Length: 307
Image: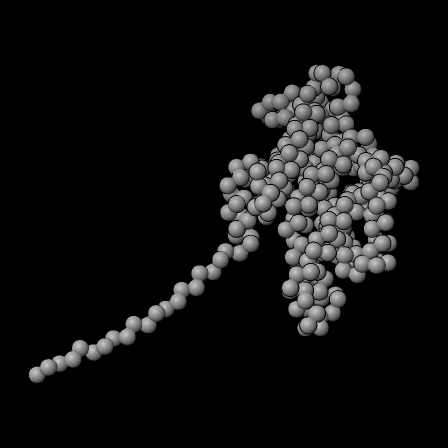
């Protein structure tokens, strides 16, 4: 008896491969940049040293000890002691906490102000654009450091308490930093307004606030991320310069700048290098690492700019 084999129909299944997200692609490109990854690990080390390290120090920050004045590095004091017998390593870690906090806070303020004003300027154009950009041009035409010196000198003349200076310096640095960022964001917004997704928002009848906050600014995040990284380095340098000149963070609150200012005579400069070399090295390595990381992020977020 003849039997027929059943016909088995094979169903073809379609496998949909999801492309990796922008941030995953960025991380993969960033991992290939050895300098950027080394800088990232060094910055993580500096954060841990500055924010967690002081809790493991056996020395109290502002306790003076006349018997241990100007001691060179030893097993008890790894980086020596200063003119008041205070442990330099403990003060270096606390100074890093202050300097990094000022740099990051000033960056956040300048990014918020610059991105909002730049987005409003590029979105509305006309009179709004002219007013915002002319204010930005005026501020950008004034050199940043002399303007900061004038503002800091006014604070010194008004005898602003030391505990409030920290916050005022953050505002001053963000005041100087937002104009350049606003111009960059404005150019990005002018380009994004011509994209198809913005035409879709017109069809959907979305409000201007939602267009700016939920569509235009989020699509500018890669640019903001790179510029913000570089702004942190600039803020740390500016704060260190002001503190070195005695116009920024004032003692007893430590910062890398006023730690270098403590070695302000020839004897300290020649005979006691442990007073100024550690904070100077910390400023140099931190700023270079931030710049290298920002350069790596720029190349990772925009493959056309990779060297």
